[in-house]
Image (tube, rainbow, N blue to C red):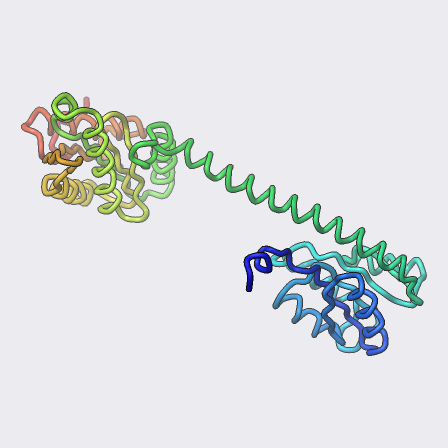
Length: 325
């Protein structure tokens, strides 16, 4: 196939559904002569099978047929949300108002009475295809808008450098999870983590190297966390992990895995090789003095401060700290 043939638009496909071969032959000849690609079905079930296998651009469907009439064909096609918009023109000798209303209520988009007036048929086909083109364009615009909205939503809750949840969103998540834990009685824990002597690294090697360290630390956190855990950049070189259904002991073991992984990791920025350590503080709920997400966060932050002042590269649990007054 040549490039020109590959780039050429595919012909408009019209499915003609009628149990009388003479009717099908006449419609096929007329529509084919106008450049349409005609496909045929002799009953309603066969039409449905063809539509599901490869939806046409338009359907010309007789009303009175064996197996399944045109009204039922219209109902089934229009009720199937997996299908695109397909205009359906019902063709029948029954031309009473009640018949037309029944067809339109079944989902048909237009109605054509027999004997068929071919100029009218062609005009209605062109009109329905124009509507389909506009509907397809609208559907495509809606899909693009949905993708753009999802992208904007992700940007609004994500830290640009690390691709973790940002500070604002992680605060929202913590409040939601704390309330859920408070209602259900399930455990929840928080781990606060801070890269040790990160400012010295920035001062010595520059911010690009610091960015590499933050990015790769985020990957370590994501790789170590469970699917249900929520990982965020809390600010600067500080990270937070919300651990649902987790007590303080389990949170401490999680933080230890992070600590070991960071200590073993080689951070490389071109020719620069840096080793880092991380200090961690963990706290859980329920616990004495913890009656709000802010209190839980404060206990984890106090434990982190104790880890930093106690020599760094260690995990401190809130229960190891003096009880709050």
